[in-house]
Length: 111
Image (cartoon, rainbow, N blue to C red; front, side, top):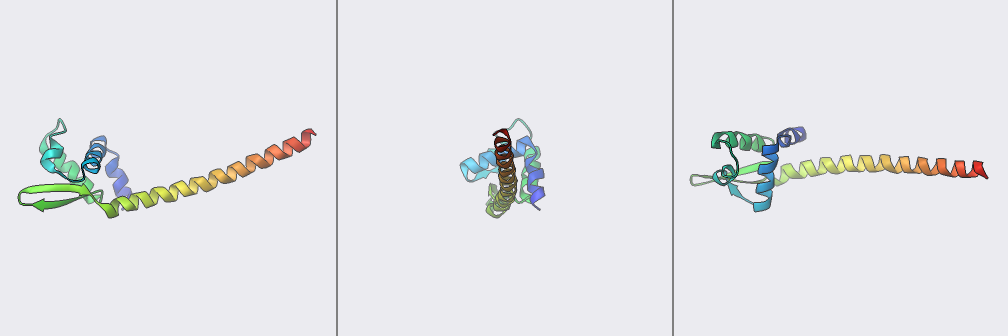
């Protein structure tokens, strides 16, 4: 499921939609589509992909469809990124320890 979010966010238009919604909190589909030079049905398709990937959620109020960030979906993305960050941090720490060991050995050998 997390990869669905990344696949959805791979598209530049969808990333821009998410930025807009994140900045404004809640936006109608009409307001979102007014910011793009593409048809409302095309924007609706992008919104559908973002909804299905759990990046955005949609509420209906009368005839309006209002979009906001899907907090649980975004937390999954954040958790995944944190796991990857921690993995690389540990790897870089081990690399740093190895480099320090090599420096000490070379320093000792030069004396």
